[in-house]
Image (tube, rainbow, N blue to C red; front, side, top):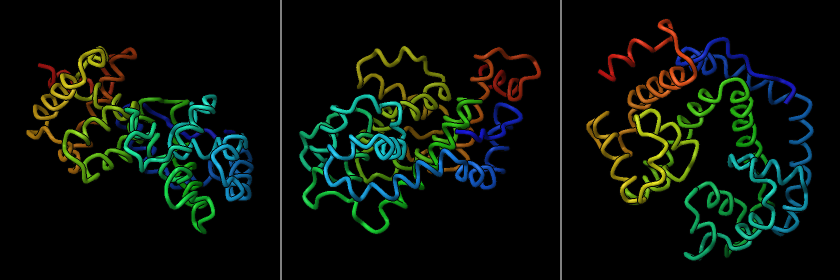
Length: 263
C-alpha cells in the first residue's frame, strides 16, 4: 500500500501509540489509491461470483476475499482454496473442517458456496462486511511491514475472543487457537514456550499451553483471556520478549519488568 502507518517506537509503547492513533491512520490508509481500486473492484464484482470457480478466477476479488480472513498469503493455492469453498462447512468431513487453522473454515462458511443455502455474495451487506474486514487486516499487514510484533499483538487482541466465546468445549477452543498461527505466535512467546513445542504430540502441546496459562493467570482455560488485563499483561511480556530476541539493551522498554518475571 502507498500509505505506511506511523510507529515511532517499538514494544508496548508502540502498540499503545498505534491504538491511540488508529482511527485517523486507518482512515488515511483506507483512502489510499491502491486500496480504493481494490475495494471498488470487489464491491462491483463479488456478487457476480456465484460459484467458487468464478471467485477464484477474479484475481482482485479473490485477493480481497482472502485478505478479509488473513489468508492473503495463500492466494497462489487456487485449486486448494476452491475445493475448500466448494465443500462448504456443513459436512463434518469437509476439507475446511479437517484443517487445523480455523481461518479456512471461517472463509468457507462466510461465502457459503458449499452449504445448503448457497453463496452469500448476493446479500445486501455482504460486500460491505468483507471490505471492512479486509481493510482492518490490511492495515495490520501494513503495520507488520514496520513492526511484525505489533501486528501480531493487534491481531491477537482482535481475534482471541473468538476462541473463548465459540460455544465449544474448552479443548476445542484451545485447538483452534493453537491452529491459528498468528494467535499461536503470541501465545508461545508470551507464555514462554519454545517454538519447538510444535513438534510434540498435539495433546502434549495442549497440556503445555494450559500449564503455562494457569501459571500466568491461575486459570488454564481460554476464559482467562476474557479479562482485558490478562490480555494486556500477556502482550506486554510478548512484546518485551520480542525486543530481547531482536537485540535488547538495558534501556529496552519492558526489559527490567521481564527480567523480574524471569527470576
